[in-house]
Image (cartoon, rainbow, N blue to C red; front, top):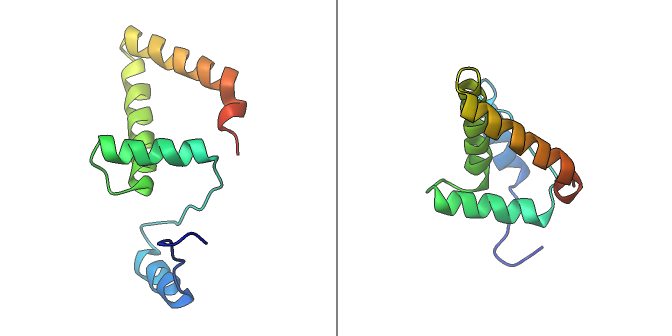
Length: 95
């Protein structure tokens, strides 16, 4: 383990689960270092509270663009371009 990085104790994890069981689910995913770096950059650029909030923000932005695409042709075009580019390069992002 790297210096400065600690794992939560079992007790702390249990408290978190108990406190947030009705409103939150913990998401632990493996991702390439590039993704972790991108999330850290997003958190910094948008003044977010770390990588977890950056994930939430990314889903918020995606949902907003999808909603805009329903009636805005330019948003639809951009969403289609992003989807195509991601699918073309998805091996770069896949864990």
